[in-house]
Amino acid sequence: MPQCWSICFAVWSFAFAMSFGSCLAQPAIDEKIVLQICEAFSNRAADRMPAIVTPEASKKFIETYSSFSERLDGCLSATEAKLRRGETGATFLIQHTRYESYWHFSIDDRSINEISVRHYRPVTLAADEEWEEPFRIRPPAPRTGTIGFIDIDTPSNQPNIVEFFYATNRKESDQPVSLERSPRSDSKGNRALVLGANGWTVVGDYTGERNASLSFGAARVRVPEGHRIGKLELPSSVKIFGFTLRTDSPNPSMHFTIRSIAKTSEDQWIKSLSSTKKKRALIFVHGFNTKFRDAAFRTAQIVWDLQYQDTAVLFSWPSRGEIADYLYDKDSALGSRDALLHVVADLRKAGFDQIDVLAHSMGNLIAVDALANSAATRSRPDVAQLIMAAPDVDRDMFVQAIPKVATVAKGLTLYASAKDKALLLSKRVAGNIPRAGDVPASGPIVVASVSTIDVSAIGDELFGLNHNAFATTRNVLNDLKILLETGAPPPRLAEIRGYPEPPQKAIYFRYAP
Image 1 (cartoon, rainbow, N blue to C red):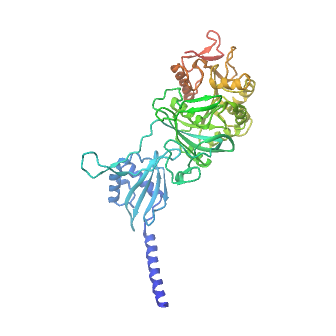
Image 2: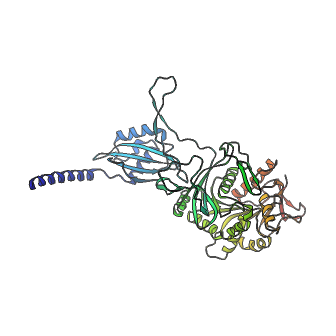
Image 3: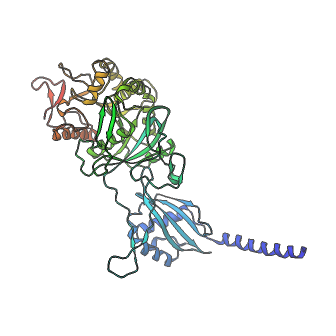
């Protein structure tokens, strides 16, 4: 028996040594080598492959996947991934400019003798696109009699998708995820779908209740094909005395719909912001009586209508989305000032050198007060443009705060309206106390350093289209677009004219369709 044990031990030791020696004999493959291979592939240049790759493997790899070279360009990083059970070689996750992909490298004792792309997907903020294999077997074409053929499986097009970051101090909803085309998950939790290793988690929604901390993420909204500039197409509903009796089902071809809402950690959020090429951001702060999804729809509409090309961020504060909760919303707004400054600070950490803030209605209570109070601090937020759309802010408070705001904002623009629906509602609920965004008979508020524009002519909703003045609303959006792109003072359009008219000196501006 001892002799048998000795023989077994000797055999095991020999096998272990051979295995260990084989592992040591394999060539080292690291991030640097993988990125060199990736660059050679992107340029379809077999002669640029590192010497560790055999000529046959280089030629075959480039010929096989040449149709993907434009898609899998811009080799940014390579991270080694776990191998499948019983597999040898090495697998790397490679980040490209627009895609990410998994590559497997078959290795013998001297070189890499085969490279294959296993799957890839478009890179999105929420990382919620499904992985796709480079090739798939498709069914035979009708009446051909063939068994099947291999064809390139290009990613499905995602028309009319608006993608933006968000930060919110609302509580997360405990309702299950119910979104248009929810992404497939790797694992399921009680209320959320975990989307792999990128640290993004799909959530259903956010409520109107307050949260002590901020949540961060990205949202994707689909704009309907028949969308008209200035209009927010949503399912119609019937309400009586504040109670909803009926709401039509959303139709993606007719209505704005949520594609996904995905949250992540603050560190991952800042990292994703850092990876964006353009370092200019627009923060949209919604107003009173706005649920989270409504704020997401409005953000998507503004971004789409302006054809905004830089980074958009929604700051959504805890509004319950009900008229009767005006005082609750107002207190929530006042309690969200530090949260907004926190978001601005995170954008600075991510390398953004120009930050614009667009606030609507009660959202201005947050933006104006936050910036005014920050003026005396060491960590001043310093924004490029503060655009105040129909601000639901007490006039006296506004006049007192603006001089302080002017020290931290390069440009201040006030779009005032006597007809804005949200502002009219706020004014009525607030006891008809004069608001900064209103236009009484005496004219809009005029404060030094603020460019005031009376846009009452556009109708009853500044960002919407509940009237027939389609061209009017479009021109006001054009004015906003020029302001964001150039920072030029008014008048920026022929339709916006100084008042009073020459030869008198203009004290504010009017939109005159």
